[in-house]
Length: 181
Ligand SMILES: O=P(O)(O)OC[C@H]1O[C@H](OP(=O)(O)OP(=O)(O)O)[C@H](O)[C@@H]1O
Ligand SMILES: Nc1ncnc2[nH]cnc12
Image 1 (cartoon, protein in one colour):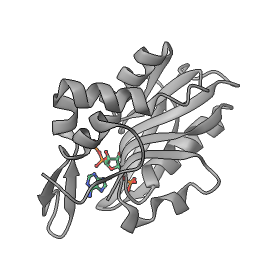
Image 2 (tube, rainbow, N blue to C red; image 1 turned 135 degrees about the vertical axis):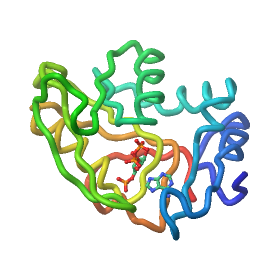
Image 3 (tube, helix red, strand yellow; image 1 turned 60 degrees about the horizontal axis):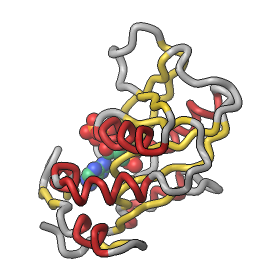
Image 4 (cartoon, rainbow, N blue to C red; image 1 turned 120 degrees about the vertical axis):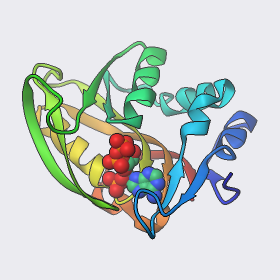
């Protein structure tokens, strides 16, 4: 487990959850230190605390979750907050695509697609994901929401990798990270 993870705010349940983040050296490729939040999701108390904290801003109409771990978190946050959830998908998965955006990652490039007829113009969108690294993913999600005519009110992630300065990719955006490292 990774003792260097800090909790930005919150009580003992979130502190305990932060201690469950696992460090995996050289994944998915040599030189990358992967932070695995799987153990946080697998623990009922930690999962509950994280989901509650991610949804607490409450000023959104719909949650957008990013494939793949953002699906697990986004669906739980949406259900807890009484909203629906829309999944942004990797290419080739959707029967009908409204829009797509290409972006850079810490370890490569990627594309996200917005399903057709999923977001309505004017909806206030909260983007939920597990990790903020370079910010490419959140930037792409924000662009997709903007282009759909929505108001992207901000993003909520479990863990921010501060050394990668991902907030610079989403300037003037309200990004809440529960944990930092
Ligand atoms: O801030 P960024 O540099 O964009 O990185 C963050 C993204 O990277 C990981 O996803 P990945 O694309 O590896 O996909 P996965 O969730 O399907 O494993 C993570 O789950 C975030 O979505
Ligand atoms: N180092 C990392 N650990 C976990 N998820 C990531 N996404 C991008 N970089 C990552």
